[in-house]
Length: 241
Image 1 (cartoon, rainbow, N blue to C red):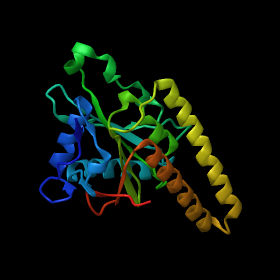
Image 2 (image 1 turned 90 degrees about the vertical axis):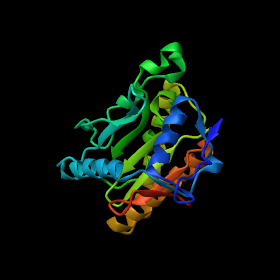
Image 3 (image 1 turned 135 degrees about the vertical axis):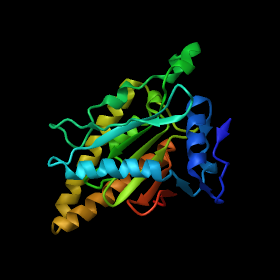
Image 4 (image 1 turned 180 degrees about the vertical axis):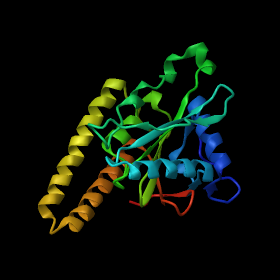
C-alpha cells in the first residue's frame, strides 16, 4: 500500500500533521508514492525552527562544521527529535562522521519491531549553502536511514524523500555509492573552476553543477526533492529541475 494521495487542509499541500503521519506510516509499513506527492509540504514551524537554530550554530562556528540531529519514532509511536546537535569532525568539517550508517536495519527487526526507536529522517546543515551532496543522497538509499533528508543552508533548505520506487542498497553498496558520487561531484567542480572567470562565476557554475547532479540522482532513484528559501517559510515546494 502506498502513501501520498492525502493532501491535508490546504489543498495540494501536506500540513505539518499530514507530513508527520505520512512519514511515520512510511517507516512502519507503507511507502510514499512519488506520483501522488503534493506540490508543497509544510514541515511546521517547530521543525523549521530547529533547523534554523542548527544552521546558526554552524555559521557561528569558526570552522563552519555541519550539525545534525535525528528525528525518530519514540516508544510511544510519536515523532521525536534529538535535543542536541552532533558536530562534524574538525578534520572533515563539511561532512558528518558517518554515524548515519549506524541506524537500525528495519528489515531485520522481526517481532521486536515496536521495541525500537526507529529513525524517521536526518536533519543537518550545509553552512556553505550547497544542495544535497553525494553522501546525503547515498545515505537515504540505506534501509536503516529513515525516509527523508532535511538539509538547512543559509539561502536554501532541502527536503529529499524516499519513495516506493526507490532502490534500497546494502550498507557496503551505500558506502561505495557515496564515495563514487562524492568524487563525481568533485570532478564537476574542477571543470567549473577551469571555466570560471572569477570567484563569483565559479560559485555560480559549481552550484549549477551540484544541482544537475541532484537532478540526475533524484530522477534515477526516485528521490523527489523539495526546496524552500531559508527563514521565509516552513512550506517546501517540489523542485522543478
